[in-house]
Amino acid sequence: MLFCSICGAEKNPDTPMYHIEASNMRICVDCVLRLHEKTMLDANKSPEVKKAIYRYERQRMDRDRVKSDELPAPKELKKYMDDYVIGQDSAKRTLAVAVYNHYKRLRQPDIEKSNILMIGPTGCGKTLLAKTIARKLDVPFAVADATTLTQTGYVGDDVESILVQLLRSAGGDVSKAEQGIIFLDEFDKIGKKAKDNMANTAAIGEGVQQALLKMLEGNVVNVPIMDNQAGQKKTIRINTKNILFICGGAFASALRKHNTIGFGGASVEEEEELGIIPEVMGRLPIVVRLNELSEEEMIQILYKPKNSIISQYKRLLALDGVELTFTKEALTEIARTAISRHTGARGLRSIIENIMEDVMYEVPSLPDITRCVITKAAVDGTGSPVYKQTEEKMALAGNA
Image 1 (cartoon, helix red, strand yellow):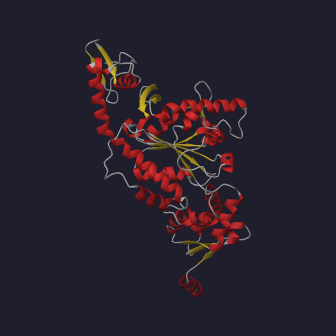
Image 2: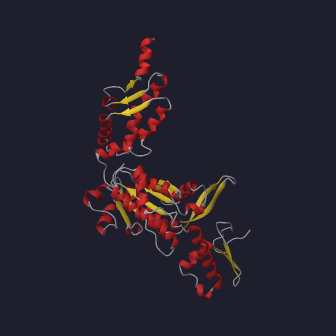
Image 3: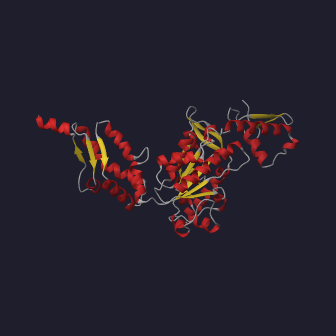
């Protein structure tokens, strides 16, 4: 077994080891980069280290290089998002350009990455946009709730846990995980001015932001994971240099005061209102605002996207030979109910699920039914879904 003379890491395919003959030392690639970046070693006086850095950078460039014909153009990315996300055209354009530039820069390691801050009310599509664009790019994707993160030593999840989720999404492949996307939800809740924060909670939130800095700016992070075979924890090193972080939150108070926060970052006054420390805000140079969904957009969300909730139920009932339809009035009532609950698009699914529960219970026991119509009365509770037979079946039933 070979071990790094500095950090003690064991040599493996993900951690190459280099031998420095002049001092009879072995040094892992992570330590080489750290020492090089911090100018703790003078590469000009250490040819072995200089060669090691060059070899590793060439290997990483070859592995991380994204071919131009494999990377969808911003217009193609937006078009794909249009198929799954209703509205938010401005946010889609900004996100498409930002993500395209992020993965294009993998061919130019000297270009710094630009993480993204998404601001918008609950249920406006922040998580869905991030998930959709990750699916189009076929890169690992992980969602983490920022409110569950804590500083080391406090009860909760350490910030490194979000990299564990990304690694799982990548099937345990470190190289794939290092090119993935992490969406940090509820980011406003760890702000220094979070509405529900007491003094000590706000301090913890600021501590979490400080802990996230290393990941956001791009560093090698030691991630503890459980080795199921050995039954004990082991440490894996993940370089966050090429991981795109998208932080999302409502930031309600900031939006009320600053109605124009958008692409290009926030002012010092806006940063203070957002509750994000300047060091973190500097790592989130692209600020995207999403608008509250209108009633018409809420109606379109019900049926227009390729994987809409209504289309899913249509396919389910089609397996029983039943056609499902919603009246225009029913769709409007569903949208208005969700808006009144202030849950955004997230509330639409729970409303549909509640309506369809009785339908899915009754239909399998009604073999003569060929059509189910959801009316406004079925939505507001003053009536029930309408079940219909074809004229042919009705005639056969009458003759019998």
